[in-house]
Length: 431
Image 1 (spheres, one colour):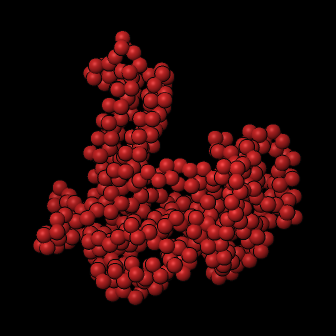
Image 2 (spheres, one colour):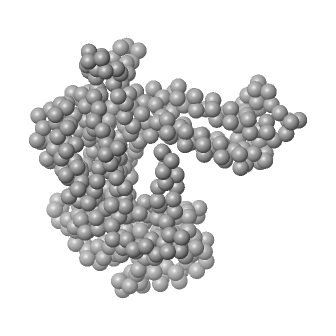
Image 3 (cartoon, rainbow, N blue to C red):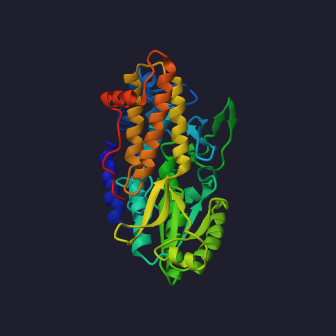
């Protein structure tokens, strides 16, 4: 099974520093593909061929045998991914690439093998799409740096259209640092250049790796491992006198500095570094701000008001004080995220207002639990409770539109929601 080989690769890479891994492609076979099929979610969107898990498994044995044969002969060619757009904060749209089902199986196998090779190589500052790492850990480390280290300045950075801008030749060169299997490299290149179908029109792709692909997260981490992480650790930090730190989650990262002049130098150097690898720093989303334990006092002396805030992973970070008077970094949900979530819930309630009240509450609870699990953390309780109150008002208003005879008073609505078990936030997570 592929899990056993993944464990072997990890042990090999850890023991043999600098030795390239071979025969990765040979481990993508009928058994590993069948195992990946078993794990695949039936609800995943279908690609350009309209085939999903249910259709594919009607003739699973023959399909996997044919797929394995094409892979062995190096005759496998992935189909173009279907481009769709999903809303993102700020009213913009995020492009996603939906692969065909068979391509998803191969992508997922390749992604597991790549993770086995590169996970031991990735650095501690990287938190996105890695086993046993998550957003809350990234935020916790960022808070630790600002509170425990001599941090006075923060650079909030954003790479413009990162996933659409990845340079294929640089990426292949990075992969070849640790992978000697030319067949595996050719397979990855085929996925990178498979193209996109948008509204029935084929679009060639000579750069980028579409979000939505099973391989995109690990390929993004490989690219930024070389472009950003190693450079920051080996060049930036060693060349500065004061403290310098970084926390990265996929293409979203924040850097912390002791001295302003070094933070300013980093911003200049970052633009040059990104441009060397066909990337661009978004000027409207990249900024330097004074932030840390002395920021409020220093800005007050200069009569510049409160310290500025910055956003990272859905939270607005701001300077505050604990009940004991000590400096702390506090969090609240990014207002754009709040507005987006409320809008989506409002639209859902409007479309489904004729459902039985019990079913509405059950479905709403699933959405609320996910929201609480992420955003209900220490120092963010007020913002979350304000969000809950707004959701209850929307639900109250929708239900009262259904029938004049069954209109609720607010007290009657509250009692009904308690009886039906509308979930409330409990026990915030410490970050």
